[in-house]
Image 1 (cartoon, one colour):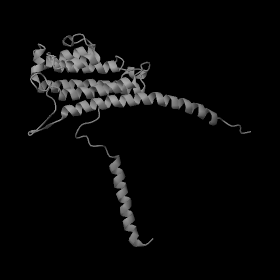
Image 2 (cartoon, rainbow, N blue to C red):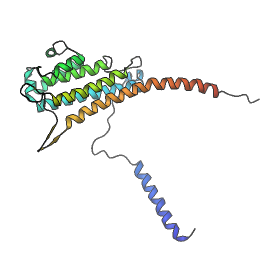
Image 3 (cartoon, rainbow, N blue to C red):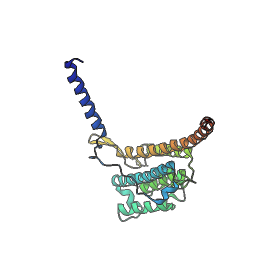
Length: 246
C-alpha cells in the first residue's frame, strides 16, 4: 500500500475507536437518573407484564397527586371549599380516599366515570380539585380491575385500559373548554399569554395517557405472544428432534 494512504487509514481507525469509546461511556446525569423500585418478595409472583402494569399504576397515581398539587396552587379557593385547614391537609384527605378506595362525599355516591362526569359538571359546587382527582383515580383503578398491584393470577382488559386513556383525554378537554355560570374555566390549568406559556399540566396528563396506552398494548401483546409461543413450540417440536446416528 502506498505510504501516503497509511496516515488517513490510521486516522480513520483512531476516529472509530474514539467513537466506540464515546458510545460506551456513561450517559450524562445532570438532569436526573433513572430510579428503580425497591426489590420485594412479591415480585416473585409477578410476570414482566404484571410488574410493568404495577409500576405504571404507581406512576399514574403519583401523576394525579402532582396534578392535584398544581391545580390547588392555581386554584387556592378550591381547597377551602372542603373545610380543610390547608392545601396540604386537603391533599392528604384526597390521597387517603384514593388509597383506601373510599367514596368521596361531595360526589354523592357516584363512582368511576359517573363521578368524573359530576366533578366536571358546571353545577358542582364543592372542592372541584379533590373531586376531579379522586374521581379520575377511581376510574383508573376500576379500569385495572379494582387493583393497583398485579400478580400472575390477575388479568387486565386491554380495552378497559384503552378506554381509560380516552376518558382522561376527554376530561382534559372538558377542563379546558367548560365554563361555570360566571363564564370562567372550571379550573385554571395550562396558560398561554403575553407573559409566558405554562403547559406543565398538559405534559403531565400526556404522561398518564401514554402509560395507559402502553400497558394496554403490552396486555394485548401478552396474549398474542402466548399463542405464538404455543405454535412455535408445536412447530419446533416437529423439526428439532434428535436424529439417530447409527
